[in-house]
Length: 325
Image (cartoon, rainbow, N blue to C red; front, side):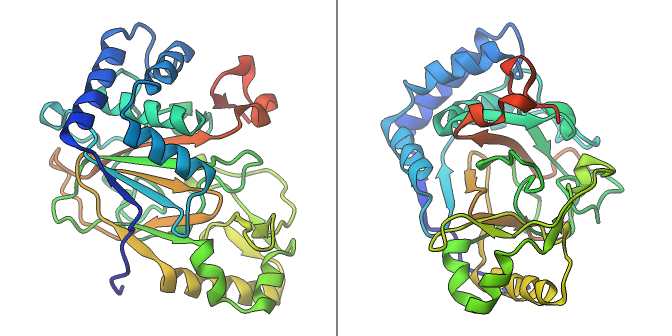
């Protein structure tokens, strides 16, 4: 696989700003009585966000309004309490239920973007989820694998897919080979023909849940890959879960895939690096890497955020943060 361009929309926190975020995170952890998934935790994180460093709040606010040509925001220098981390989890579907500095950081930024959400069918509905290699799952096309992860939107099949995906690195892989690959429609669309754009906007694609959601038995109808404003559309697709239902749709999806590879940018993260992906206009994947299963493997934690929580009210019992259907 050729090496691609890197993400340039980056914020490097000053040491004083890192210290402030760490203080806010530790205060959240010290007052925790309910766990990371509790509405009370999220409410306190939302209040604490108001005290976050101005450069971080400003960058997140601007990204929420418009995510730019790359559809990615990289923040470096966030605290993750790296010196006190336990061994990297290696069990399937591991999540972060207890209060930690990293979980607090993710919740803070998710509140800056809107509200955190989770899906009950995936990772048991945890708001903070571990993305780690799992023995025996090397070729699994999902967060437990270590082979090439193809381009996709997160949970694009769902009527209420997340607006943003937050990926916070706690520990890099041994060889620093794993890289987040992203491709934004705002850089991709000029690489496909007008005829292909027209097909991608037609309801000629079946979209299934990712393997992490388990067996899909729902009856699905074809839908478009592109929707919304013609000059700045949204995208819903996953290369392993989108099935074209016409020959022209198959050709269009193949052309789009080639454009993704041409426009792709790669980000290799270290501890304290947070990547925020605009899931509405940007697809993401991951380069392959080799886990050792020695307790020091790559460890990323993930949170989803939406800008309008009300939109999914009928999917969230008791006005909580977990979509149950």
